[in-house]
Image 1 (cartoon, rainbow, N blue to C red):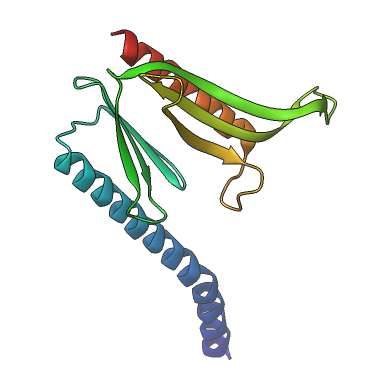
Image 2: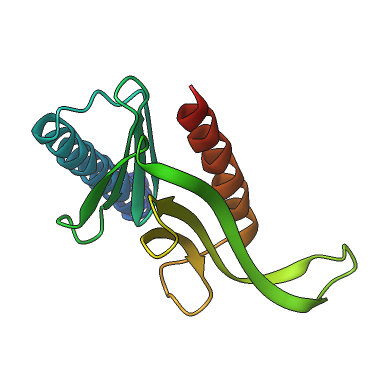
Amino acid sequence: MDIYSLAIGVLLLASFVVPVIYILIDKHLADSRDRKFIQKIASENDLKLDILEFYPPLALGLDSANKKFLVANIKTGSEFDVIDLKKVKKAGLNVNHLPETYDRLKKQKILHLSLQLEINDPVNKKEICLYDEDDELSFEPEFKLMVGRKWDAILHKSMLA
């Protein structure tokens, strides 16, 4: 009887542990694949990324020595853009939100959040979408707002240096 109880216990434990191990291994493989993709782009464009951060589905990187900004879509694995910050005249965070507040903390609901880079003239703009309410891959607008503010400060600092 003890052997059967032990076998059932081991099977139950395995049924909970094996999926967790599978998810961890899958996540690790996806992260390493994304890093290899970014390293490949960086080496092809002669970039030495000082800062590299992943905010699915985007990867943002900065080469402060060459003043280049890398934006890559890691979901598709093929879309990327290398922006020369020497040519950027103006950079800013664009936040579109509802005019009314929606909770006790007086927060406004964010509809769209992006970094906008004006390159040489007002007509030529690059928009890096960090959050869009209609996009199924966008989540946590407050977190993305913090990310946007952080990268806005990093870009301004790099453009001034």
